[in-house]
Length: 475
Ligand code: FAD
Ligand code: SF4
Ligand code: SF4
Image 1 (cartoon, rainbow, N blue to C red):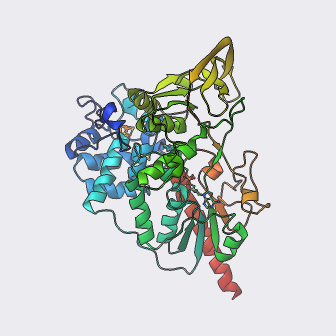
Image 2 (cartoon, rainbow, N blue to C red; image 1 turned 90 degrees about the vertical axis):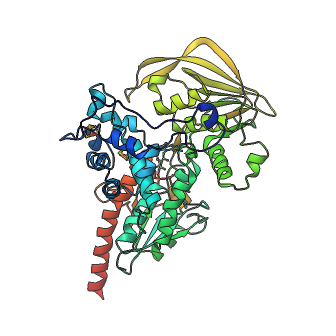
Image 3 (cartoon, protein in one colour; image 1 turned 45 degrees about the vertical axis):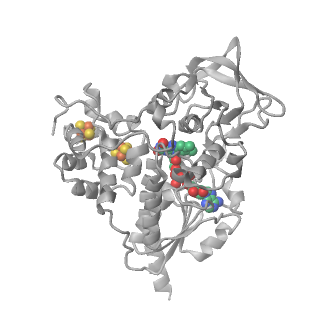
């Protein structure tokens, strides 16, 4: 260990931009065993590991790095599995530069952070290949059932832990496949689909009952599910796309980011997607303008490149340093040929039968707003036009109106529409109805969904034990 002075930081090689733009496979290779051991050995085994403090799961990072450095990969996997239901997924898609790696002391000493995410991915991918990932073994049956609405990272994580604790677990999802945004939001070049599907299959094999194509609000009300189950978890994520008001925004060819990404992900599964085949969600041969600067926008520009767009531009009203998306993703996108038009905001969409261009103005950063970020303001007389035959709106997501969607006006929400929970119990204002993930936090990260799924399990378990005890006493 402590090899960070003599051994430089090395991430796994990325495929050549030209090659990776031809398909939807992940862009980074995996470490060879010697390389993983070498990179793990750079960790200085800090007494107070800031990497772990800043990992939402508080993963035992120095421990599994040490085990990897010693070639004890199976033990490293077991250690990593103690705190996470999907370490290989976090290793791929966490914004490590803002979390574990961004807080590694070696980064601060100028030696370059330990490559924690890449090692984490290596450990659990190896575990899958070697057959060390054990089947999910349900705990002794407690005779109580739980209904989980939403099969994203939060719902799947809670489902796994609750099943291990001995509950009958039913997961309802309006999509035909589980995984939430892991499946239909995040593209394969960041997270290949079989990586998610093998996790879902493991849960199915462990006896969790998935009710796919089941939309709560349409196929059942919340109240109906409450009568079926002893407790409910709402983990429905946030899906109301933020709107942009400007002339022409309703023109054909102006599309929502998630519709575009879902169509592309469905194609990766080999599904029939008429709106892709008729060109609506297909960027091939088009001048594409994506509006926004977050992770969703990055996924849209890079998907457009892979679909064979003629040109891809990302229009963002702040500058590179002030964008919400990951800097690594911007770098990847630039390598793949995306052009970033910083400090620019759309003003109007041109074209009547179909979009032909986006009119935009240059922006400059003014004084910091209430959140501390410098607010963009319009630069006078700075209009310009970008040709476009596909415009993708990627401005972020808010919560849907769950009380009306679920036909449950009593369900309490915050002023942002997210579910209001008691933070000590993670329960909503309805007895036995808990909530976790983006629907509580607002749009966030996969790793926070997993953390919430883990935390809510404890609270649900406590509630269900008390309920069983009370029912026994009453009988
Ligand atoms: P979700 O993953 O949204 O899952 C919610 C599930 O609930 C969905 O399957 C949905 O179909 C289901 N559902 C909703 N309503 C109903 C209903 N009425 N009835 C039945 N089912 C319902 N995070 C990262 O950490 N790294 C990234 O690289 C990253 N990239 C992203 C890219 C995109 C395009 C987007 C949109 C988000 C990205 N995120 C990323 C954020 C991350 O995906 C989310 O924070 C995370 O998935 C939230 O998990 P969740 O379980 O709360 O909800
Ligand atoms: Fe880092 Fe995410 Fe893994 Fe935590 S879960 S160690 S933040 S990559
Ligand atoms: Fe190792 Fe960096 Fe974590 Fe310290 S902060 S324990 S050096 S990974």
